[in-house]
Length: 207
Image (cartoon, rainbow, N blue to C red):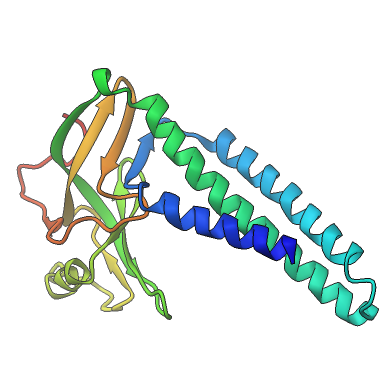
């Protein structure tokens, strides 16, 4: 029971931190931190599985095995989600000190867009030449569907090939070599962020 409560608290922490996670950092790359979160999550999953085996001696082996496996997976996911989101917040605080950070509005070229289905179906755009995966509103995705490039070979509603035909108008912050998109992260870009690219726009994401 204590293990389940701990997992629940971690998932709650993940949701609460998400309220403040409203940026997507493009550069620099923080893969080592992500790998550290993955390793910590693996340890959390292992501990959860051991607890499941140790504290379920009254159950049969066929009952204990799925319980331990389930606790391991839940422990891994809860630790990874909470730690990676918390790391994202701290990375932003370190990379973008208030006195050295400037904000500006610019256009990012969109390489493609896609949507997922199910209970939590969402719509996303991917940018180029600096890659990012940003969630957009349903209205912006519908705009892309109804304003596709003339002659586009596929009409798949779940994926839109842009290759620079569409742009995302975003607010950026820059501090040295660090670059991030505001009003993103675990939030959707504001409605109206997607538009067809003006021919004069470089859309590089740099001032």
